[in-house]
Amino acid sequence: KREAGKTEVAEPRNKVPCPAPSLPTDPALYSGPFPFYRRPSELGCFSLDAQRQYHGDARALRYYSPPPTNGPGPNFDLRDGYPDRYQPRDEEVQERLDHLLCWLLEHRGRLEGWGENDSLEKNLGYSWGPGWLAGAIVTWRGHLTKLLTTPYERQEGWQLAASRFQGTLYLSEVETPAARAQRLARPPLLRELMYMGYKFEQYMCADKPGSSPDPSGEVNTNVAFCSVLRSRLGSHPLLFSGEVDCTDPQAPSTQPPTCYVELKTSKEMHSPGQWRSFYRHKLLKWWAQSFLPGVPNVVAGFRNPEGFVSSLKTFPTMEMFEYVRNDRDGWNPSVCMNFCAAFLSFAQSTVVQDDPRLVHLFSWEPGGPVTVSVHRDAPYAFLPIWYVEAMTQ
Ligand code: 0WD
Ligand code: CA
View 1: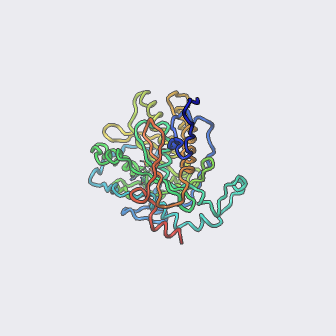
View 2: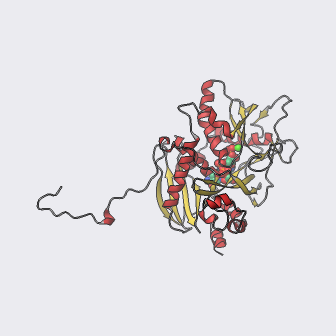
View 3: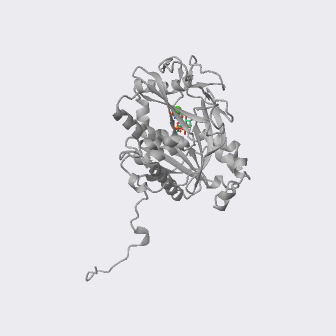
């Protein structure tokens, strides 16, 4: 309304209030149809040895070797060897994307040169060849898992640092102050529980195909085998790497990632209420983690309060949703994937400047939206100088 005696002055354009962009995470906003997700294919792999040194091969890959089905069944003491035969990885070392970048440097020729071309994808405008990496998102599988479960997460927030370099968008997790405080104050029982997960792997895996597990040795969590995969979510080409527990020499297809097996431990359950809660919370995380790389089966070992596993159950990744399909308080894979796609679009449109020293920090706490802050150099910049220099040659 025009008031007498007052001149109306338009707000200068640069003063128009402009809310900082943010992304909501409510599940109801993402319940559309399941988005396109390309069947993940393995581009390569690498291993980390007992000293956490990188090797561009499969030396750390282990072989699925469950107890014979005709025998007495498992009786694994997951506390055996703790803490005397335990060499835990030094969690103070922030590795960020370093090992994955190491693999990328070694294979940049194949990623940037003419690779096998998928003509259907080419017709759709998504080619695998020169320029593919420049349009891709590079990250760890574990970071994508956190994005998939965000609409249902009520406990732990996250921070993801993002930098664009030569077109590619790199995403690297930053430990939140709360997560760091929790890690430093980790109760002894939780430390032992972490060991028990790795001990289970030792009971279930052999070093060579056809041989038997040897649980007498040490558990060294520096050792890792990582698969490097290519996929696409909606319009977002993805290159990510994830740690793989073992390969099943008896799998119907020996082609990775379909021969891979994910191993998990969980508390023995005794009531329908305990199973329901397991389907609602644990299976969501298991599904998200294994669906992304196309790992078809998760083998669970159920431990009793004394730390012994006497029963195993295989959960096919593609059947996990069935346990919550008719549960009003269950999770929905479409919500997970649609939110992840929305986040990737949000990140792609937020990080416009191509500069390896510039970081957009995406932060999320349960109950709120994803917010963004901008930083330059330390402590948030994460693309190492050796990578930037080698890629600039
Ligand atoms: O820099 C970071 N913020 C992170 C680095 C966070 C998470 C993982 N990593 C490292 C891991 O050490 C590994 O070398 O990245 C690599 C691959 O990770 P991912 O496959 O993307 O991670 P995720 O899916 O979260 O974990 C897979 C497995 C875990 O199996 P379970 O069954 O517990 O989900 O990797 C192991 C663990 O066995 N793992 C770790 N091992 C040592 N230290 C760690 C860790 N911090 N996190 C996961
Ligand atoms: Ca595992």
